[in-house]
Length: 97
Image (cartoon, rainbow, N blue to C red):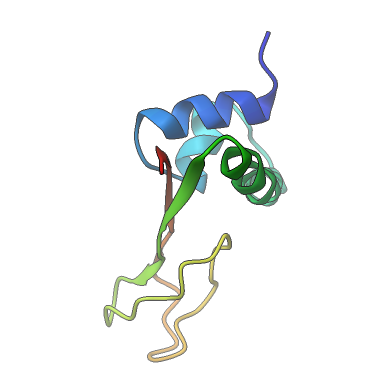
């Protein structure tokens, strides 16, 4: 049986996913599920780095004005440019360096 982090690593090696998509695939429902996955992703970034891989981040983007956020392991709540809360989540993928 794999741990949650091992499952996330396996999924991200196959293709890119958002935090919400990972929560659905891992059957994690509830208020804090996205926060737990974000914490896991921060840890996973260090784990895969030691294995010669890299956690790629496609940055979050505002769906209203197109503003592109910094590539970070977090989900922004509001666009600093237009103040919209209509944000496309960042996407994550693991690749060999």
